[in-house]
Length: 389
Image (cartoon, rainbow, N blue to C red; front, side, top):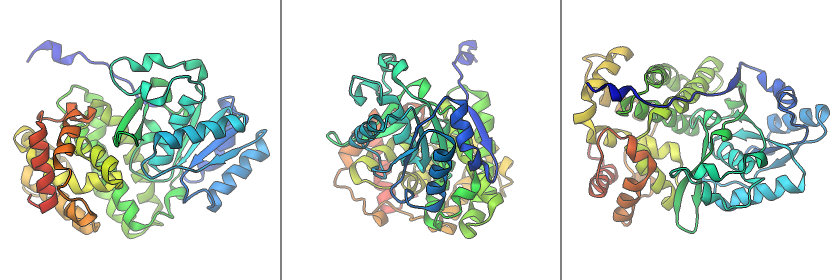
């Protein structure tokens, strides 16, 4: 083994305040960061819910002001970010509270980045050293409050934003996009319906699983991924079955943050396919990863069989090996009512070639254990359409 293999760069996350009821710490978190007039960036479905309105009122009582912005699509777009920046300027806001699911967290972080920039957002796509173009003095701090357990965007240094003109998802990156303070309060996730709990939970699993299988060297991420997968195994079914199970909800919030921490080691083919499918078909990202999971695992079998045997032992699966792990994934999806095929969620083969080309060009493809060609990504997509595992 070459000693050069051990050369890499590691970055780890931020200050996290975890526990039931910790949302009460939100105004103090803002004060700690020098935020006096935050803009809450949230999902359209959350903006009128009591816990968001209560948080806004609590901030207004303690701080000099607090606004709210919720014009965000499920797959946030560049236009959404531009509208948020305008709202931020109009209200003279000096910080962002990203409050909600992955779309709100990604949009909130992007708004906090763009509020002080003169370039367009696509100039900061995670390619080469584009991040050096950012005027860091123009950025404002972010407090992240996730209300779903899936994306882990609260501990990420990037946002996934859809370029509607090109119909492609782009990763916008800067190290300072990482929220300064995260509040993990499981009580905020109890209102999630079972199908969203399932899809977002499978997203968390996909993050840890792809990080675990990535060939890159990052032993701390490897350990976090391993434990993140175990937490999903032990607690996702309970969170779906009983949405008020606070222990399961809290453990899934932790698993979500762990997955996003671990994928600094790399992602892979699930995300390389989910990103173009989400951009082209406007489908839920977590659901796409959940549907694609067994097909991508099968395609990678020759490169990950030994690793999944070790993982199966850690999870306590019978007859540890690739097949036992694959069967566990299939059984978990069935238990959670995850569709077995892409066809069941309205995706056909009409854009097969386009998706293959977009997948091989996606940044996530670089972390896959096997460097698939565009044609091979097309084959995986066809398998997922037909249900051939």
